[in-house]
Amino acid sequence: MDFSDSPDEAAFRAKAREWLEANATLRDGSEKAQDHFMARDADEVARARDWQARKADAGWAGLTWPSAFGGRDATPIEQVIWNQEEGRYAVPPNAFLIGIGLVGPTVMIHGTDDQKASVLPRALTGEDIWCQLFSEPAAGSDLAGIRTRARRDGDDWVISGQKVWTSGAHYSSHGILLARTDTQVPKHRGMTMFLVDMSDPAIETRSIRQISGSASFNEVFIDDLRVPDSARLGGESDGWKVALTTLMNERFSISVGRASGGARAEELIALAARVERNGRPAIEDGEVRAQLADFIARQRGLEFTSYRVMTSLSRGEAPGEEGSIGKLLLGKLRQEMGAFGMELAGAGAGISAATGDDVARWRNEYLTAPGNRIAGGSDEIQRTIIGERILGLPPEIRVDKDVAFSEL
Image 1 (cartoon, rainbow, N blue to C red):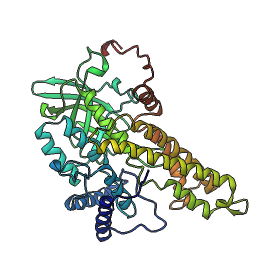
Image 2: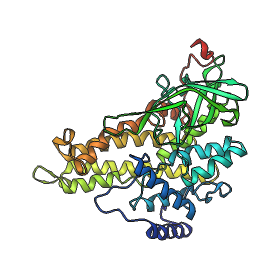
Image 3: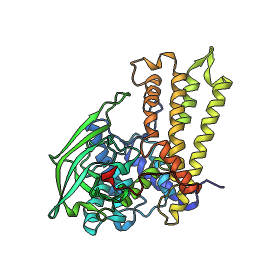
Image 4: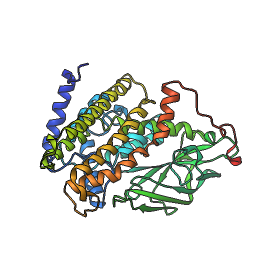
């Protein structure tokens, strides 16, 4: 296969590069590519909003969105090209990944005309930042086991419960929330999706300090949050169907969205050239070279596999179960590369308090990488999806499949 740019893709790349050269600053050699999406402080949120607004004004935001919703009707490959080019510049984190990559496409499919008009433009310009209120203390991988309740009260819904591991909730303006609305049916059939305002006093957000020292995840407590029925996304008790749309877009964003810009293996090569092993540059060590070659091969394999998914998207198909393959493999690969980076950085990497150097860089990667194997669905969930929906293996035995949630 020929993965070089077609004439149209080359023209798109040239336009993207021209705009970026005029509006952003190239990263210097010490700065890694921007591949995270969570802002670290209020200043970074403000800079991210400004950058998003500039992109939207110039037509570079929501590239693959239909033009009817403010997008560019770009192909998935063109989105990859943009990611590659933008990754060369010192730009703020993409704090709008959830809003543009997950919420927007879900609203396009399941939302009313009013919801599309109110949600999509503001997500595109960065005026609104969205979070995903799915996981709960007793419902992580088993998302259908959620206990947050929404009861009907006239023309309103009253929601109470707790969510956890909510990325960016502490600076998000809005959230997409899954709640249980019927306990007398099996768990997958009694949920409803809502669009909520995170500034409502009935919502309390508490940041969770992670082992890496960052606090990008949150607990979210909802105490009698009252929302109008117009905030319901999709049909009553159709929440699982709506959630699957969101989850498929999430897995696609994780697996395919990072395939274009992850310079992880390249960063390890640069590190191996700077540090020593047995009195000589580590890059000259045979075992190190073999491990680096393995990482490069796996990274490229993930990239090429992602192109198959993007081919389906270019034909107008929705992202499907194939995204689970990339998501499963990417999490494991990043964890192994983080561990190898720590090994190359030296014996003191695990206890050093240094910041801004190789030690800090790979210590942070080592401590945060395991979370990638949980976010968007754990490894076990991805294997089940691959086995049942791609390989056609017999489904996992589910004793609670036809049991009312109230009896579980």
